[in-house]
Amino acid sequence: MRAFPDRSLLRSVARACSALIFVSVFAGGLSAAKIEDVTFPTNVVPKTTNDKPLTVKAKLYLPDKFTAPVSAVIISPSSGGVVDVREIYYAHELVKVGIAALVVDSFASRGVKSTVQDQSLVTSWQSTNDAVSGLRWLVADGRFKPDRIAVMGVSKGGQVAMNTALEVQRRWMKMTDVSFAAHIPIVPACSTVNRSVVTTGAPLFFMLAELDDYTPAKYCVEQVERLRSGGNDKIEMKIYKGAHHAWERLGPKAVFEPKGENYSPCLNWVEDDGRTVSRSGTTLPRGNEIPWQRKNCMTLGVHCCGGNEKLKREATSDLIAFLRKHGF
Image (cartoon, rainbow, N blue to C red; front, side, top):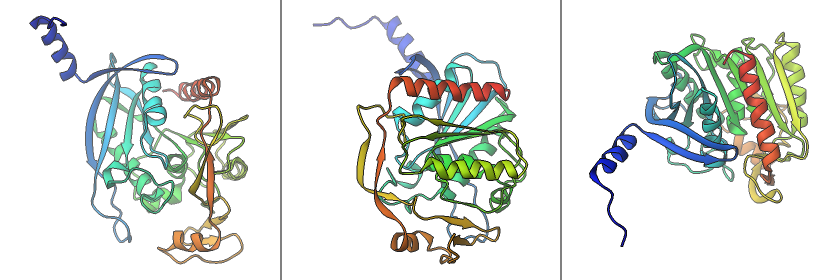
């Protein structure tokens, strides 16, 4: 029978737990972070159909030792929700280099686990407004540099990172009083994009997957060129060779999800008045864009994952280098 530890040891363990110090092992080594559970109200925009008061759940990851104020990155979840190998992984990688991370859980806040098979359960509009409220929460907290808060995310979270850079989206979200210092869209959906290309001018880094059939890289390549034509010369892009969508999850090969909703065949413009118009000229019914696309252009079946350690480390190093380049 194992002997019980002495009381001094128990007190030490209790102190560590009360300080919210967690040590986790991820690809790349050991990461120590202080983790806080936080909540805040989402960004509710008056006079829109789908905005309701909601308390957003999030986890704040802080470097074990840092001097305030510190830079921070908001991480918005992908369609798979907040998972260890992706959102939590990135939070720990940021903490390793002294950058705080706020993982906003738009899914758990709404009682949803995944939207892979039903993207209407949590929309990118909702996730984006959650990220905006997270930005305001960080700005109001004296521990963080208000002019060094970035936003990133994979897939659906990548749309959040992309859309918050657009001035027209910022007006819609009533967030012109605050702005992100940098945006990192990782494999975002670029088949439906705003026609307007005016951004805040903040740097963007598009991280794309060569073999992505979920959010194909070719549409984001077009989007990058459009945004550059709008006057933002701080846009970078990298296409990772041999990578599939959501490469953060490792595996011997990509995984096929036969019921995954695939909207990549739905090529649309979003007009400045909020209307969604197909590139063939059809105006989608406002408030029912997803049902219309399910009937007219959406397909089923997507590949994801199947990344490897080398790819994951390369992409992570690129991400950190981009942030460092811009003062994080």
